[in-house]
Image (cartoon, rainbow, N blue to C red):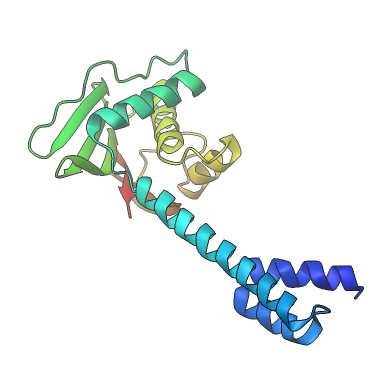
Length: 203
């Protein structure tokens, strides 16, 4: 292993896996002790800063959203990804009995569960009886994923649907439960006797 490859590997390990990086530095570093100390300190500072920033980002995105904040974000996703589907939440969401409900169609409803003023979970209740209703449900659920996990691209959102066995259509046959997680969100789908419930719970 040439000197510059060793140095690059050492710095990479120090940044992402400090203990292993320090061991690598002890065995292979070509720097003197003072330079090793400065490099190790700088990498450790970056590691701590990155993890604190990630923690702050997670806390900011802990779905500390009010119903109105969710509505704005959902509509932004709909405008960006599905402008022709007419799936926006046009009216302000009003809270009753610690939840709110929005009806896209009589057979397709969105319910938000609240903890205080903030949302703790979202559920989509549907009873599709034909392919059009099934596709509409998938579109709403896809927009919900895009709203809650904006870092996911179309392929990643499709992977969530695949994990839930819902990529092609919403099946009302039989009973089933599937779950998957992305970031701070646990997604699940439950079906029983023709009723299908999609859930997004915030960890």
